[in-house]
Length: 326
Image 1 (cartoon, rainbow, N blue to C red):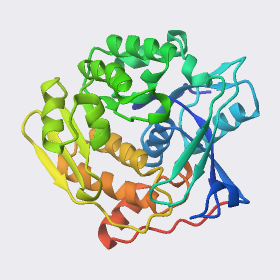
Image 2 (spheres, one colour):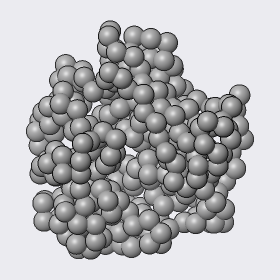
Image 3 (cartoon, rainbow, N blue to C red):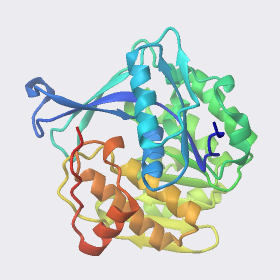
């Protein structure tokens, strides 16, 4: 048997079993059936990158339960390297319910009691040989909300040494923090270890103290980040490179079915664009299109687009319809 291919992107983060209601636009109390998929920011980005043909791997932890097996099988099906999915003998694989009421601004209900396995990642769970050499290392800001995970990922970033394409997805999730101030105190110092930072206005405010796109991008660059990306919602996205290259790209409008996975589809396309060496405008255009496609679909990991679908979206302005699989 041949050795597994070396990953191009290593994502470190949480994983969960996500349940999406088939009844859209109603509260959870009125939902009768759900569809199931794996989720979590790093998980979805790894799946999105794999769908675009990149060799991706996920570092996370699951419970010693059937859902842990579900996660591994799903990753294998998506083409994501699952070798680095560790098992916690005490904790259960977490479950997340989405409430699509309204679809564009869904609520998320996390069941991670008393803790989730991914909160207890240790340095022994990390493939440190890959950390040093992998072309893209992707870290979500939510990693720093949990003490053990924070210590581990901080060690990872220190070992990485701010190598090119060390990405911090600012990923502010209020339910994981006691306050924005607590999140800022944990996330802001990590900017000194990364070369790419990406987040929306609120996430930038948490990281650098301002949600103004131009000011936030400059503040990120002032911290030594090489590429600063600020998502501006209805105003599009801004990308500013330390060498002076920049782009502001308008959003790609779609009818939203589920607003949860768009940012992670954006992340997968960003991974692809970085590996391809695309200019900021081309990269942001593709990222917006990828996000729009997933927003027009129900699921996250399962519904990440292919390159052909992104091209079709850019050509026609209409999100491609993917036939459902059983």
